Length: 282
Image (cartoon, rainbow, N blue to C red; front, side, top):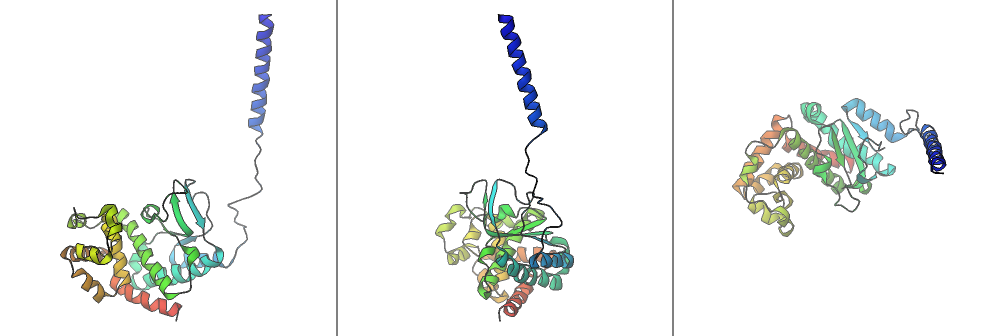
């Protein structure tokens, strides 16, 4: 009896194994969609992206393939009717074209080869996490990512503010690539606010040696907000701000020299960007 039961068990096991092997050899796969098809329908934005890539060597991405952002990152792709004018007016006319004219070496050596347009913000690891962690998204040499594209408006103030933030985010890339200027972190060592920056005003921060309260958070944001200020304000305004604190003046001079060594004059670019945005929105 025991022998019969043993043989029955073995037979059942063999049947189950064969059935499992059969399933493994013939998986059910929905292969009706080719996400990488080169024959996918094209539109005006695709043509603009081709033109930018040919002219500047930068690929703008609004169709997110699986390799672009890992599965633990949550985001909203940009809407087409926002991504098209954003790519034309912000990426091409405000970002790449002025650099190609006034800082060609900077374009060649320091501009990433991919530009991600994200509709809203970026959430890392959890959909409930904080949005727009720019330093995290842009801590890579070859790709720059910008959120808030779905809020694009043909408005001078919106475009001009966004390009300041774009330079801020690109500063994070250069920080990762080269490191901050030697001695930069020691200038304000021991006086950074950490999370207490929420309680500070920009006026207080400037007296303490930072362009913005957020710059007082930590050295990485101190560096990026200094770059941002040099793109936002005319040179005479920047010099009036740095005169409020010797530490701020020292860091400003370090950042200015750092960018000049990479082939771009941020003060000159500030002037050119003011001119370009007036041409885009008369």
